Image 1 (tube, rainbow, N blue to C red):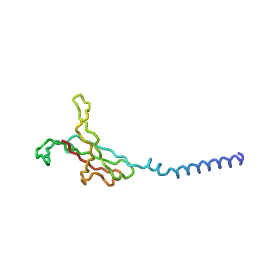
Image 2: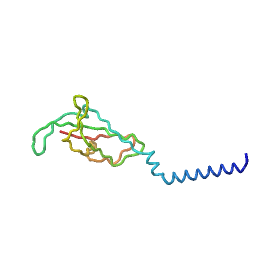
Image 3: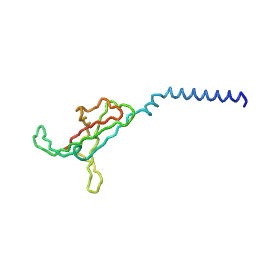
Image 4: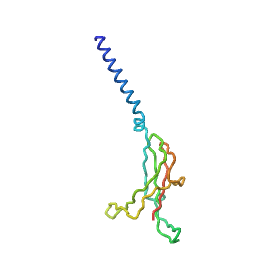
Length: 138
């Protein structure tokens, strides 16, 4: 093989490696965020102790009413710690007799509280982490 060809192939390989390194250096934060990220999921078990009916007494009326206590298990199955995690209930659906779900118009969207610390946001969640958030609806 001609030495000029080897020089040309080496020069092209070096130029490609330089462009590749420049690309990685320019977009390293986006590449890292794409590869290393938290992946949050929710497990819901619709039976006690995670879901049960109880009674709640209103602070102003003192009249007992039915209340459902719900607990959700939130887990981080990603490979990076999640920070300032919040759980937001956007809507409530009720299963109908035919198996379909109907939106409950009376339900107000809300941030749920963490059962382990009582606040609305969890500061840090490391990978393979699990915790519970709670809600009560009447």
